Every structure is written in C-alpha cells, then in structure tokens.
Amino acid sequence: MSTVGKTITCKAAVAWESGQPLSIEDIEVLPPRAHEVRVKIYYTGVCHTDAYTLSGKDPEGAFPIVLGHEGAGIVESVGEGVDNVKVGDHVVALYTPECKECKFCKSGKTNLCGKIRATQGRGVMPDGTSRFRCKGEDLLHFMGTSTFSQYTVLADISVVAITPEAKMDRTCLLGCGITTGYGAAVVTAGVEKGSSVAVFGAGCVGLSVIQGAIRCGAGRIIVVDTNQRKEEWAIKFGATDFVNPSKIDKPIQEHLIEMTDGGLDYTFDCTGVVSVMRAALEACHKGWGQSIVIGVAAAGQEISTRPFQLVTGRVWKGCAFGGIKGRTQLPALVDDYMTGKLKVDEFITHRENLNNINNAFEQMKAGDCIRCVVDMQKLE
Ligand SMILES: NC(=O)C1=CN([C@@H]2O[C@H](COP(=O)(O)OP(=O)(O)OC[C@H]3O[C@@H](n4cnc5c(N)ncnc54)[C@H](OP(=O)(O)O)[C@@H]3O)[C@@H](O)[C@H]2O)C=CC1
Ligand SMILES: N[C@@H](CCC(=O)N[C@@H](CSC=O)C(=O)NCC(=O)O)C(=O)O
Ligand SMILES: [Zn+2]
Ligand SMILES: [Zn+2]
Image (cartoon, rainbow, N blue to C red; front, side):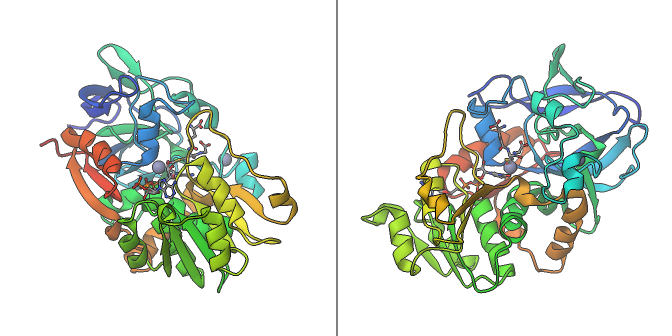
C-alpha cells in the first residue's frame, strides 16, 4: 500500500536529553510539504559532531531531537514543486544545502548556503515546523538531515541524487567525514603539486585530507596524532611521516618547523582541539603557509595566536563540508569512488543495526573506530 501523502510510523533513535543514550522509539513522520522530500534512510554513519551535539556542548543543540547527518537512502515521496529529485532516486543527505539562488550560492566563493540556515539551526523545517512526532511531542530536526530515523524529511535543496549503482552503506559516508577532509585539501586549500602538508588528527576527516592531498600531488604529508594506533592508518592512506606529539619534548609546531626547513605549506586541524588549531597555524611556513580549521570545538572555546603569525603571512581559514557544493559536486565524488579513485570502503571499521546505535557512540570514544555504519532498516 502506498505511503505517499500519509504519516509514516517508523523506528528512530531519539535523543530526549543531552548526555543520555539515544532511545529507540516509534515515531511519526509527516508527509513532505512544498519543496520537501521524504527519504527512507537505509544507512547512516555516526560522526563526532553527532556525539558533540548529544554531549550538550553544541550551542545550537536542543532536545528532544533526531540526530544524524551522514545518511543515504531512497526518495519515498516529494512535496509540491520538487523538481531536483523524484520518487525512487538514491540520495545522500546534505547538511550543507545548495539552493543555487542565494547570495552565498551565487558568490562562487563558498559552499555555504544561506537559504535555510536559520531554521536548520533551530531544528525545524524551512516553514518553522517539525515533521517528527513522538509520544505527543514534536521532535527537532538536526542539521537539516536527521538520518537516525528510518524515514526523514529534508528540504529539497538538502538532497542530491546519485547513481543507484553505488552501495548506500558506502555513499552515506560521503555525506560528511570523507567529503569534508577530501574537499578541505582539494577545494578549500587547493593543495599544490609538491607542497608539504601536516594533518593534525587521523580520524575519518584527517585520513580524507590525506586522500585529497595525494590527489593534488602533495610531496610530504606529515600526520600528527596523539593516538599511536593511528600511525598504521596514516601510513596506509599514504602519509610520508607520523609524529606523536606526546613523544616529542618540545612544542609540536617547533618540531614540525625543524622537520620541514621552516614550516609547512598547508596544515589541517582535524581534532577540534583549540590548542591544536594554534599549533597547526604556527607550524605553517612564514610568508605563505595556510592552516585550515576543520575540527568542531565546544561552546565557549576560542582560538588565539600572536597576530605576528598572520602579519608574517600565514593564513588561517576554515571550512564546512570541505567547501564542497553538495548538489553540484557530490555526484562526481561518487563516480570517483565507483572508479576506484576515492577510498570509502576502507573507512568502515564497525557496523551496527539501529537497535544498537548507542554502541557506535561508545566505539568512537574507544579510539580504534574510523567510522561505524548503522543499518537503519535492520533492528536486530
Ligand atoms: N568542519 C566540518 O565540516 C566537519 C568537522 N568535523 C569535525 O572534525 C573533527 C574530526 O572528526 P573525525 O575525524 O571524525 O574525529 P576522530 O576523533 O576520529 O579523529 C581525531 C583524531 O585526532 C586525535 N587527537 C585528539 N586530540 C589530539 C591532539 N591534541 N593532537 C593530535 N591528535 C589528537 C584523536 O585521537 P583519539 O583517537 O585518541 O581521540 C583522533 O585520532 C571533529 O571535531 C568533528 O566534529 C567533522 C566533519 C565535518
Ligand atoms: N552548531 C555548532 C557548529 C557545528 C559545526 O560547525 N558544524 C559544521 C559541520 S560539522 C559536521 O560534522 C558546519 O557545517 N558548520 C557550518 C554551519 O553553518 O553550521 C555551533 O553552533 O558551534
Ligand atoms: Zn559530520
Ligand atoms: Zn543557497
């Protein structure tokens, strides 16, 4: 029986309050309204940003909410006026939407889109209301995606159709971590052939920066991580050097400057630790080194350095989703994956079913997880 136009009851992992495990609930998912799309989510990754918001450290975090933003699924129904996707399309959810019409989208200078950012940040659909109900209460949406539900509703500008040939348990990871790191190197930094790169933090994001840097022809790629177990990962992905700062008897930036005859051409923070962001900037070469902040730092955290670091030519910048425009550029990344030019399978270290999604959060904390993929349609 068709579900089009009807409310769907399905399972979702609900975050009722901060700091508590997610709770598997039956929720009601309302039909999509104009310029909205309802998607059956097959797989979702679990990102540190989900854990960050669940922890209560996100200034935009509010509860109860359906978290998740690294998801892939199939369009179940569309609202009036939707013309970029159709029922049956395989899609990836985009927490950085692309309307192609706003000042940001038309600028040619950023992948950030302004069209629905305000309502997305408040956890509601663009018309200011929620499509999720549970136990008589509205649930908030997260990052415009809420992929921890078997069905979710997104703005049409927050989905991109991709080839159905690509497996959804892999493409979900292109919804955040892999695209973010890869894009940060290729699009945001524009790493040049032969240049030197330092990547701070070798999780999914940092390993993806390595992939992007290699694609750009970087010469030396130094990975800096306090977790010694990441050395093997870094080398496997193509890093030339690995440094564990806890084994160095001087500030890591000094050590890197010595290793590279004056500093790096490009550095990337993939930790979210503000002291690391400073070290990454200060490890850049005088005159031209660029440091890209990718990590998300907790509420109240601030970055600092001597302004002299910038006066003497170092550049500090950052990016969301790697600077990648989801609707325009993600299909090509999927093609790169399909033709073996982009690693995705290698990132999956853990798998869980929806009922055990909390295990994915525990695995992230344990330090040997790159990505856990959750099968949203399998409960047991
Ligand atoms: N800007 C954006 O669009 C996006 C940002 N993010 C953010 O990027 C960051 C990285 O994500 P992800 O790769 O999934 O995270 P991971 O935790 O998997 O990777 C971070 C790595 O950094 C290591 N680390 C922690 N502290 C330090 C330190 N002081 N010096 C060096 N290494 C350190 C960690 O070690 P250990 O294993 O011991 O913890 C871990 O190996 C997160 O903050 C996330 O929220 C993610 C996606 C998109
Ligand atoms: N809500 C937080 C900021 C969280 C954040 O920086 N999110 C990134 C994506 S992280 C993905 O895993 C992002 O897209 N930022 C740009 C944006 O417009 O949100 C806070 O308020 O500090
Ligand atoms: Zn993420
Ligand atoms: Zn826009």
